[in-house]
Image (tube, rainbow, N blue to C red; front, side):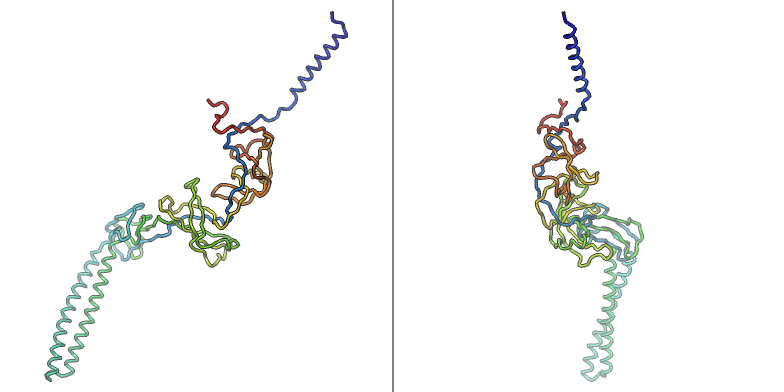
Length: 370
């Protein structure tokens, strides 16, 4: 039989045990562990950072030619349309030459008449010279014959000039490509009436692109003709193109105080097209620096931060950022991180600081996957 004293002891023990369980339940639980893949982290290391000026602008063809009408008339033929490749000298179209053909015929007739007149004047001058030597013709008659010959020769020269001009006009009715390339514009159609100077075709050579940009005057010292420039375009994510500085303006823009620069980009495979927006950096110099992917940096607060893994948990670390490289989509970190640190990148940046983080082994299936 249990006595009263021992019963009190047992009861007290039960009460204390119950209180202990209630106390454990009241303790706040820490954040649940997060499992991330190896692609969600990066071990920080020093990388080469380009420090040249950045450039951006719209691409244009390095060689471009606008074909205009050399004379007025009706467009009879259009043999090339937009996107068609053409060769230099290839016929692109024709303008009605009926009026010009009449002028050519008239000029040819004028040349023939002038040639006959010169032949006649030549014989008369030769006869007059012979008779003058024999004393049968006066000197003034000889001079008159020679004057008529000179006049006939001048008229023949004028007739030939008019014929050459008429033939040139006739040749201008045939529209030809001045350069090899691709037709980028054709604002006229067969049947249109055009005037001298009317644009008919625009041809670009896609083999080389040009970017006209500007850099702040204080960065002029980093620019040299021939310096490489590495570019990216949103049309080709992840792909890099390399061009060279071709021209640097000798004067800054009076309004912006920036230096105009022209960069050429080889385009042998023809993937770049006029009108694309491109941005890049002049490869003036390079240095080694700590960098992280741009999506590892959270700039929503007062100062930039990254999430670093330390002791198996995520901790928020303030960082000072430097050069941003749009080509590699990386950001230089001037302070706050050291080589060997592990940071979260991409969507993992939203992890709550203090959360335990476990990195899944490369090749391992995510939890719950079959």
